[in-house]
Amino acid sequence: MTATGAGLSLALNTAAASPYPSPPVVLQPCVSLNSQRTSQWDSVVGENYSNKKKIFKAFSTFSSSSSSSSLGATTGLSLRFPHHQRCKEKRVPLAQASAGKEPLRIMISGAPASGKGTQCELIAAKYGLTHISAGDLLRAEVAAGTDSGNKAQEYMQKGMLVPDEIVVTMVKKKLLEAVDQSGGWLLDGYPRSLSQAEALDALNIRPQLFILLDVPDEVLVQRSVGRRYDPVTGKIYHLMYAPPETPEIAARLTHRLDDTEEKVKLRLQTHKANVAAVTDSYKDVITHVDGDRPKAEVFTEIDKLLSELQEGETNKVVIGLIIVIDPLLIKCSQDSWKGIPTRLNTCPYTSEMRSYFYRDVCEATQKAVEDGHHKLRVQITIPELDPEVDVHRIGTLLELMRELAFTFANDGKRVRVCVQGSMGEGIFSGIPLQLAGVRRMLEVMDWGSYDAKGTFINIGAVGANEVQEEDDMFILTAPQNAVGNCIIDDLKAMVNAAGNRPVIIVNPRLKDVPGSGGVMQTMGRDKRMEFAESFYTCYNFRLLYTSGTLYPILGALRMAYPGPYEVHKRFDTTPGHEEYSVIATFDHEPTRSDIGDALYGRLKKSEVAQTGFWGFFTGLLN
Image (cartoon, rainbow, N blue to C red):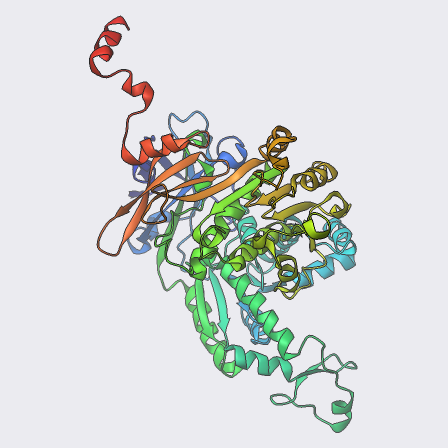
């Protein structure tokens, strides 16, 4: 890296960032008078390869003290890929080191009653920032009758969530207005989900600081339960901390229906889930602030953080290099996947391990739906989801169904989660043991505090009569045959009624179960199995053992759409530690022989034919 009077020049070899050979990336300075505008990409790298594009990010940090004088007005970097025909030029933002004060870009999050509103008022007043609340912004756009507001109102009138792209468009517009007017913004309580954070990232909207107000749950409950609302003035009082001034005001105060202890605790759970969803996206800029103090003390700490940030006391320049690798070389199933968790025979699993698999399933399924597949199969056979073993937990299956439903409901889709009912008639009626009571558990389990269940998520059975016009997709809980009864006819009727709407079956068991007369073994079996195999597998995971045993784990088979089937082998590294490594990949589901050959390093039949005595003569003939 060198600094010159004209700016900065940097050459970076990407071999360390990727296992594939790649030409060096040359970066040259570009000059702009508006550092905010250089945060928007001026051109697009490469072509649109849908989900098959992989971007590696490399960050280099150096002290600006040795090169600040030479940086001058440089606020961006021009990125080129020599000898890379697919890629064009792209401009990359360079944080400018300046002695002057820069506009602030702040995000703030806090639970209900954490004092976030008060702190936002204080921050906006002192630093002249535009305070942006997504909820207030949405209501204002609807009231003003703007294009975005009218589109949002259409969804709201139907009882549907407003899609992220509409809200992000509103937020982006407001942020640009803030830059033009005051040069800085304060984004309040947004983003609340990973998809929203990714949408902002796609627009290169990132904060310099993400403030997270921490207040103990019991304090938040106390603050909320004691709140009272004055319907005349609109003022909020608190029976303990800010009591009404007169008995007359006290007599007319009302208590909000959602300020009960039960409702407050549900809101706190939702807040924690929202924070957890965006933590990874902003972990490099998150700062926790103790909110369980007088508001003046809280603001003093925040004020110090913002002052230091504005004055640039860190004296660092961060160059963000976007390195685009040939999309054909990288499998997008690896975008956020970090490897198989260990100790998979230790049950029950930790919440982190379960969440790991839930996320893996949801990402693969979402990609398959986005690519137009509408008959999908998810097959995940970890011990807690395997009804053949004694550590099977129906709660894990229900959690997976909920996470999968929320994945699509968060995008504004109406999801019907289905579980089959009793099959057969009279004394021959029954339900598979694994599914006994599951419908009732789905009905009473926690679906969040924003009335998701009954609005975006509904519970149903398996059958054509369960398909409603307002449903966007269907997720079926472990559909399976029982002794003497077959679910496939009902399943087929439901798929036909759904048309092109996605039907996702999770851990199906659709092989024939023989009845007393062997009826299911003969009549129409070919047609039933043909229909069962017509579902496209978007996710498959199972552990590999020696035949007839459940210990030790030899490895795992994994496929996450749109990637290949991967055979992972388990290795003991140090005592008490293990890891999984990919040793083979297949374009189709491998057979037992294929897996055995990979695990034990055996040659394939085609390879065996070219060895030995006859292989010598075959080589001569070839």
